[in-house]
Image (cartoon, rainbow, N blue to C red):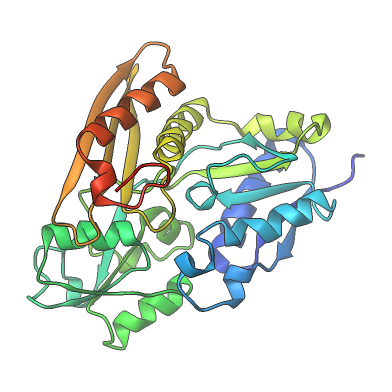
Length: 305
């Protein structure tokens, strides 16, 4: 019998829950036992803003280092947290079926974005969400917030915030969907709701196993979104939203760049059909965004502001 596959994961409830979901899918598809290996990253023990620590990539670095040291055989990440630049020695081996791409509001008293009182205090750790909130409700007081899902929800229950904004996928994965009071009507982060299974480059045996849980539709949409983000050279502090949504034989794509205060934005929309050339499509969308002044709204490395 083959040895158990070692799946590296962050130790948070959300990370281990989604990693266990992947482990169960792999076990069902391959008949192999899969065990979780919990790994702590700098982002898990540091309380400062993500942008000051180098962005969401801080969560991935410790996991990737463990994979290269052969402390595990594969990794599971929230794909939106992965830097778009290639990491030497590691490749994405599979992208399973995507969960919801939406952001949601979790507010006191069942309030929605529309019914929040004037001057309500809303928590989020995302510059994109800050801009989108202020674009629709400039009267809101938007404050920074970090921590796991339950600690953030607790800050609404305590009255510190009237509401917080979170990803629907994460809430549903850990059974906290009852906290949702509104599904928000805007595009979200590239690859939000998708998971990435990373493996060592050249590890054919593990690649063969993880390929069993690949979802081609999800992989195409998430890869397209990340290609646009990469071409924009937008870091974690840039308010950028990109959604690619499969619709029959087509993919409906929307990409937007916002000013930090939400007062200005530029958007590009496409319906892509047939065999989609990701490089060409992403180049075309980025060209339209830049022509519309995206580099004047946000910090896009490589483009003058």
